[in-house]
Image (cartoon, rainbow, N blue to C red; front, side):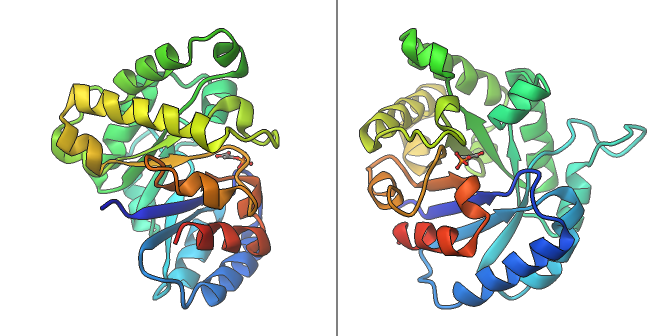
Amino acid sequence: MRRKVVAGNWKMNKDIHETAELVRSLADRLKDLRDEVDVIVCPSFASLVVAQSLLQNTRIKLGAQNVSSFGDGAYTGEVSAKMLLAAGCSYVIVGHSERRQYFHESDDLINTKALKALESGLIPIICVGETLQEREGGITDRVITTQMKGVLKGLSTDQLNKVIIAYEPVWAIGTGKTATPDQANQVHKLIRKLVAQIYSWAEAEKIIILYGGSVNPQNAHALFHEPDIDGGLIGGASLKADSFLPIVQAAV
Ligand code: PEP
């Protein structure tokens, strides 16, 4: 039985004061949440330490939105996996489509970042997803297959067991257009099949696959109860407790 996971990607929103306010509110309102859902928030680098101090002894875990592909050293502007771990992170998002689009991150680079995260003891939430053009061109399966093979390259079975995959169709991110539960589940099923081909069905049955793309309190329940959808990676709706909480509840 796979655990449900709901993660909030706050992107480049919320300074330390706003982070503290939202974290306090979430921690307070999620006190009595049933144990079967893991809740993660991913604030900006600048707010991680503040968030960490407020999240101690709460149900909520901390994640970052990016990690360097290098270890500590002379890489101005970078943040290493070791630093994220020391700042209290347990998770890190890698390969988000905004990083692929604006910072030209390739599957190779994302793979290196995932390996760096794993070596330091962080759980990478690895994002894959097709663009609108690719979906309309009928090549979604091919795109997802290439991305999955690329991002998992060289990961041992032990490492795979610590990875979370997020299927985030680019056309659904921040657009208000959500994949239907069935559309999303079809791709999740493909992702599981690819994991089975590369590793085994036993591993494929274990891997947590999140859906991301305009999830909101109205559509979350139907998405999260598809057989291959294990929760969500939430952008816009994670920025307010009033919209994030019902999404978390929908995963129970
Ligand atoms: C995201 O950026 O990971 C995301 C899913 O965004 P949104 O929920 O706003 O579509």
